Length: 390
Image (tube, rainbow, N blue to C red; front, side, top):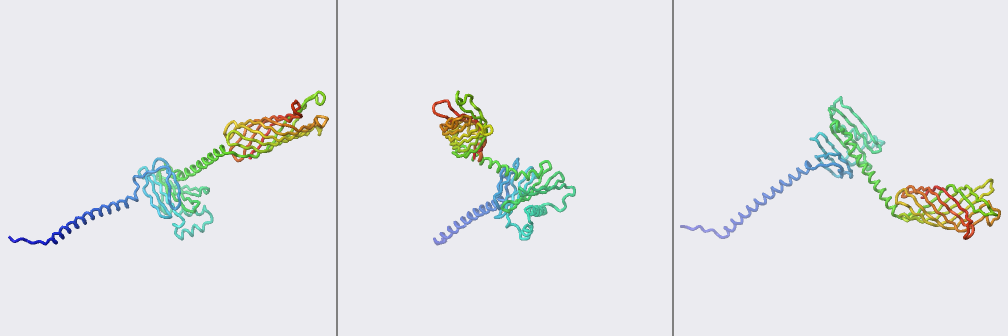
């Protein structure tokens, strides 16, 4: 038998060729799988059948705009965007209710339409042009003649709308002109029982409610900061006083009582809690009876007050001590008429709007000026006042 001689290099070449064919097959299989996955990813990227939303939804282009989808949840059918526009579509109840939102910037408009908007002298005219254009895009020319048409606008919120109701269904279109001169166009379809207009309005009304809540939270936070922060107030006010003087068997057998006007001004150093320091100047004048038995007084005192509560409205009590002067024409001798000596008072009242920019307080106090030391010669006064602190 003849033997066939096969060179060794030929065997090596055959083995190498077989390996290359196998690797190519594997690479082709992997490449096909990757390609299929990529195609599926591209196809599925435009679908959001598994995504459901309610409440807050943020549009990213051309500017961040938050809308609020009313309950129950909506199925996201489309969400596509460019650098200067974004379009989203939502449906629910077997496509019986639809919301389409198209946001676009100024640069997304063609030159002819820009010129048309530029010719409008007011924002209201621009919104009307845009709404008419959007309605012309979406609605058929042969809309039912029996359709009931309603229109409205809210220029404070920079929006207008138009609705058609027919065949147990209502279709509404909204045009919203943002502060940054971009546009948000909304198209809503719903049965009459759901009211497409109410759905469209709710998309943006809840945003305003949230902003009001945020403002209220900020104000509340600021009030809390004020409640814990020291603050200096200037106070000015006035009121009525009832004065009395001291009696003496020879100089003034019967104690006299007189009505007088009073003025008070000074500073209140609120320490942030319940405690405050005070510095007050108190002045009073009594015209007497035809400039007979008249009098005046002036007092400079330092003291404190304690607020009962850390609330916007709180009662307080306090006391002060200082220097006082008084002149009383009931006496004959000047040394009896005039006194300059230690003075003091005790007071109580109520403060309104404690953490506001301006406070109002009402109170009553008793104060006295000594006429001498360690005796019962005292010029006293009962005071009722109102004051503004700022």
